[in-house]
Image (cartoon, rainbow, N blue to C red; front, side, top):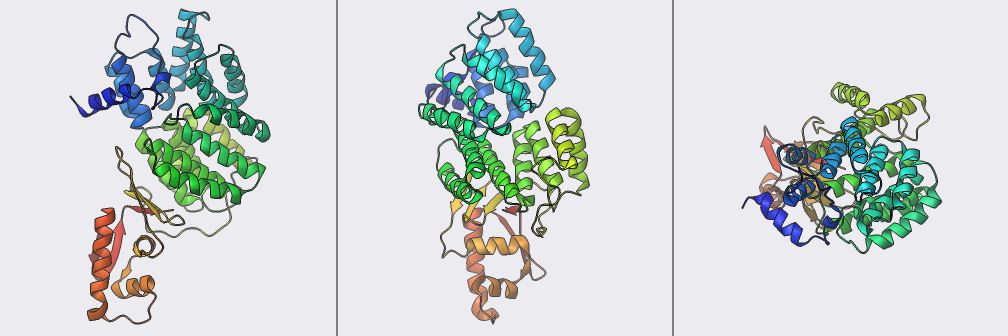
Length: 417
């Protein structure tokens, strides 16, 4: 049995815990094998790999709902729209799965940035009295639409109801989206400081959860970018992390949205590579096209020149990071696609300070010793052993690649946030 087949069997046995009861199949002459449908869902929701999910829908017999969802995540909006219309006409409004098609059509409007139409269709779909897991997703979309339309109090009221329902599905894929939306709403209703405290707690809590994955990490990073924009702080490195995670997931729309953030950041707004990519995504997605128009016209909350100094970092923005260091939380996340690992360091541990020092500024052993231990005098025969011990601990605990060449200590693959 292959690794993915083992995953399918295991997760199908744990259906309700992982929210797999929300995976519906439209019965047809071409849709007999539920395991292929489940495989596509697992590739998308558990492994956060839209490319793999798309491969399953093309190479295996899966149901149309799975294919529609994958098309939306891959940014193929026109194809998804055509497939939805095709099956709406084929099944008719009396069919048991018609509401599921409406839900995916509503999701399509949300991905396209048409929140008014998405809200209308969400309310229409709720009238079909869908099962609880589907109702959860629809209420989440309803709250999101109200948030995007500036109805913050109404959005929070709906969100509170949604979170109550979400307690029935503690491991469903919506939990992190709900928390991120709550944080963004409270930043606007109350203040950014309250929201930032909530986000810090959410990050620490999420790391310890069984279903913490790239999707959850990406969601929390986007929430942090939102708070930094509201408080007019530079979000360059966060946008870079957002871009690489979305790229790894194969989520084309979110790659495009990350490129919008990079376009507005101090450090990367003039990067030719990102600008050319954004041009291509702008042509593909109406939502991104509208965002750029609003930003250039100065009518969007994101401004081209946020306050704060440009971050100076030797990290190559075109090199995919191996790890993210959240310096304010002293948390290191090692980016392994199938198994995200993390380390939380206590205040007495020198490792976070050493990582930040080397990531921002490769230095000599003498400079390194003075910066880390804050002592004025460096004596090689006394202090080299202390440095070697710290370097050994860093390699053992993080697995990150450290170099010492031509008298300079450096580290690669680490993005400091």
